[in-house]
Length: 329
Image (cartoon, rainbow, N blue to C red; front, side, top):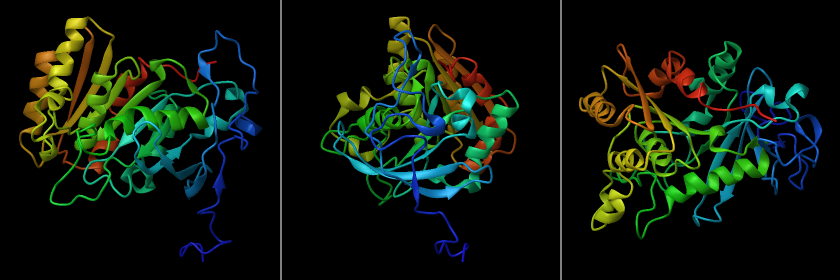
């Protein structure tokens, strides 16, 4: 009965609150009360509480939950999966804001986000790495990356392409707003990061370079380096505004703020240009002023998420965790 997800032998589909009441105020185990000093680095949940349904329950009792987010700023409506580590409901962290990692998939990135599945081990790995002192105890936001299926290789580069759904605004405004509404988060950009693979790695890296006032770090696995969606045709100006190479140069010229990009690339990637392109980006822009980079080449690594998750624990997660904050009061 549990295998076929037939209630009451499964809790799939049941409501998950993450320690909130219906008004969006912290309550229960995860609550911190409605009062906090102005000097606090933590942001209380702003509400209203989203309608989260359990997608799966992990062995440690934590939940991957899903909601349909009607993006107020992008106008796009899509699914977002979320997860909180067990520390989030630990009484000793009841008054603490937690860092957020927005995890982006490669491939179609629609109608689901493959990081929400426990088969890749992202959630259990974060818990393990935190216990080992390698990682922050990140909250995970796992939104759909694209507004439609992978039809003839069409994708949106995680950007606001003219005439198309505003996926850049969805990822950098609406999804963070959802997390702020429902969780105790970190007020400053020091608590906000991306991770992603392939086109999701591109989207995450580009988001950090384009909005360094909001995000501090990214783990980019096997990423594209420049925008290459066919939907950019006729929109060269906007395409340039979403080009990580140009954004990195602008950030260096502006002398900040500092951002941190942890690249990881397999030495057996399907696209033989991926590693040289990343190496060129690192040599051109990396560790010159505010654009800080690291590169882990994965021995025997292929272009897939099963390669990237274990490798994150071999340097990339430590690299970004050292410069991020959380839990904070």
